[in-house]
Every structure is written in C-alpha cells, then in structure tokens.
Image 1 (cartoon, rainbow, N blue to C red):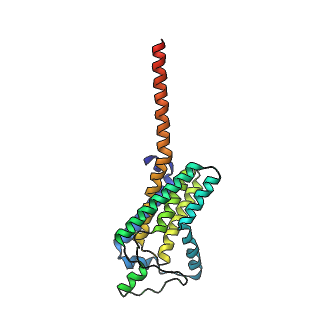
Image 2 (image 1 turned 45 degrees about the vertical axis):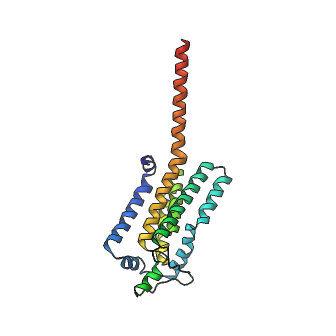
Image 3 (image 1 turned 90 degrees about the vertical axis):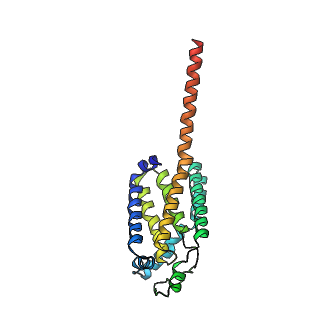
Length: 225
C-alpha cells in the first residue's frame, strides 16, 4: 500500500487534506448544521451542474469504462476497475443494510427542521443514507485511474471530479457529509486493494519465479562442475 502512496503523492495528499477537512467539519458541527452550511448556496446553474455531475457516480459509468478498457485490450486496467467497483459496492450495500439511517429529506421531517433548497426534478429517497454509494463508486474509479495512469493530469482530474461528485450528493439532498466521507474512504480503500491484487502481487510472483529459476540454474551449474 505504501508503494501506491509513493507512486501518486499529489493525489493522495490532496485527498487527505479534503478528508481531514470533512472530518473536522463533522466533529465541530451537528449533522443538520453541517448539511445546511454546505448547502446554503443554490443557483439554477449549480442545480443543472450537480444534477448531471452526480450521474458520473452511477455504476454504469464504471461498467462502461471497464468495457472501454477491454475493447482497447487493457485487461489488467479493466480487471482492476471491475474489482474495485464490485467490492466497494458490496461493502456499501452491507453498511447500508446494517445502519439503514434516514436521508436528509426524512431526517429533517422527523426532527421538524426547515430546509428550503430541495432541487426540483430530483427524486429523493428516505432510507439507506450511510454510506453514499455514488461517492464510493466515484472515488473507487478516480483512485484506480490515478494509479494506472502515470500522468499528473490524470491525478488532478480524478481529485477534482471525485469530490465534486461526492458534494453533488449533499447539494441534491441525497446524503449528509458523513455519508459522503464514508463512501469516499470505501472507494479509496477498495481501489487500492484492487490495484495491489492485480498489479503488485503479479510483480512479486514474477520476481519470486525468476529467483527460483536463478537458484535452480545455479545449483545445476554447481553439480555439473
């Protein structure tokens, strides 16, 4: 895992700053207070932006990208993203059913608190708020892309888009900040595990095989002499 951190320090440092800032907000403010602080600015442009941006956290985007990788014969990249997407999604669903916490719409109604920024045209769910599945999918995809592509531009694009997708879930009143942070951590961890399984364990096996071949070759040469 430390190898991955050294490979993409910019990506993981920026993520760490964002996550620490989010946890700090959660620690300092109440759940509804934090939600309203992050949601006090709403415009028609932002409504359109986040309604469309949140779609990138849907599972079909990751599946489509897996298919693209397969079509261009990047099988390891496709397998890495597929494992990250499936494993993070399963873990999210497990937590959702364990906690079954109310989403903002139901939460505010239960506490009889006022909130006037619900976005028109967005169908709001009431349950299974924790954690955010869209955010987990977005961060899993972003982390995999940041790890498999060496260019810094890929890391910068990933570290910009994934948090925006996560924030879209708060803006659209689908999730609280704590849901988004948990989703982000889930996506990051399972993406790193997926990358480790597909890329780093393979390299270790190759090195071990080469070492065994070298030892066997050396022993044969010694016997012959």
